[in-house]
Amino acid sequence: MAQSQNSTVELTVKATNLMGLTSRGSVMIGNKAFEFYNERNPEDYVQIPWDEIDHVSAEVIAGKHIPRFAIFVKGGAHFTFSTRDNKMVLRVVREHVGEEKLRRSPDFKDVIVAGVKSVPRAVSGLFGHRG
Image (cartoon, rainbow, N blue to C red):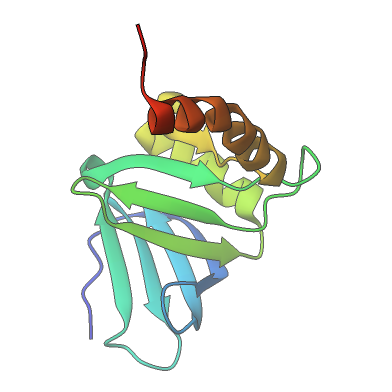
């Protein structure tokens, strides 16, 4: 069984870890780390110390609903979670990582617009510059 890194707990909420096979459990936010523990398998857990978090990205739908969020750690790995109250979780996470590390994930429209804008560059790359 995993030993918590936190000495005090600020928030515990039911959650789903969306990495690979989804697992249900609880997210525990404390003074030293963001932690997820699987409710059925004590060996399935994620502990992310606050100083290892590069940034947190949240998907926002219709300007206010947040169905999931991802925590990106230094080194490029990321962990995706969904909780019963993602807004509340992100508010508490913000207190530990800072406002500048919270980001909004690109939505479907943003991805399409970026793709359309990249078409002229892709076409000019195919034909090269003639001078």
